[in-house]
Amino acid sequence: MSWIDLDIATPGLVIDLDILDRNLDEMAGIVAAAGIELFPHAKTHRMAEAGLRQIARGAHGLCVAKLGEAEAFAAAGVKRFFVANPIVGKAKAARALALARKADLVLATDSVAGAASIGDVFAAAGERSRLMLAIDSGLGREGVPPDAAPDIAAAIAALPGIDLTGIYTHEGSTYAAKDAADLVRQAQAAGSLMVSVAEAIRARGIALPVVSLGASASARAVAQVKGVTQIRPGIYAFNDVGQIALGNATLATTAIRVMATVVSHPEAGRACIDAGSKSLSTDLVPAVARRAEYPGMGLLVNAPGWVIERMSEEHGWLRWHGESEPAPLPVGTRLEIVPNHVCMAFAMLRRASIVREGAIIDRWEGFGPGSSE
Image (cartoon, rainbow, N blue to C red; front, side, top):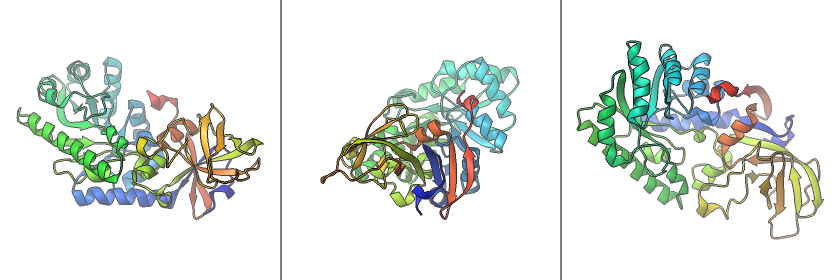
């Protein structure tokens, strides 16, 4: 298929539906064989059609980052959610209570105070909120230290209005893996750590049925760890340069492109495109060891040797990094770009042209500003 021939205004997002479906089916097969749940992280795309497609092709529910995302997906017909980001305070707890009356909702916490602010609202309504406790498995973001988890879990489980049903982590540190073998080693270590934490909490008399991990980098390996019950990958559905660099994807399994146009070519060795940080972001490949192989801020599929070296908001600054003289890049040339971090491309562009067998068959719109709350 020639992506550059599609009638799409640039910068524009394109999704190949057949590749997307194959990616969804592959991960659904992995979790089915392992006997665990798949809750894809839908903050990757924030598109109703994509989320419903994931559910239709084997996902058990959706993971989201915000209550607003859960509310938007619920309005589109999704019934099960995990909000994998601690919420705190009466106002958000009240929104969560309203949503829990319409959908199967699990919330996140990493503190007794945060859990209490949720439990107070649910208890006052004569109801209980299901929570999962965040564990820091090495990323250093939210989450309690593994050795402190049993005491904190026991305190949370004793709160009015709360059912502590599981633990979760984002093993994002695995994105720094040096190679495929190191990725598997780190993923298995994160899975084993979470299983051991769950066992220590269960020793306190808490049932804790769910052990949840979430990263596309490590999903395939984590799914094989005995005792893990749920995975929450997001990028796997579309893939990006980050996943290619880790060995989890190829161009043939990457369902998404950002289309851009060369708008300036003042010198032989430099050019500008109409896709900048508001279309692609300035993220580099997270696997530092692979940045020499995958340089710049996106992969220019049909312009090898050219690199997106810098970005301003609306401009991508291209430089020639090839071994020979610069390849011509005339003004008006349409470029096919695989983003380094697909979540940012979705967040910036917020709409996509859907392609099957070389033809545009649909347009998908992302959720509006309200879903960011």
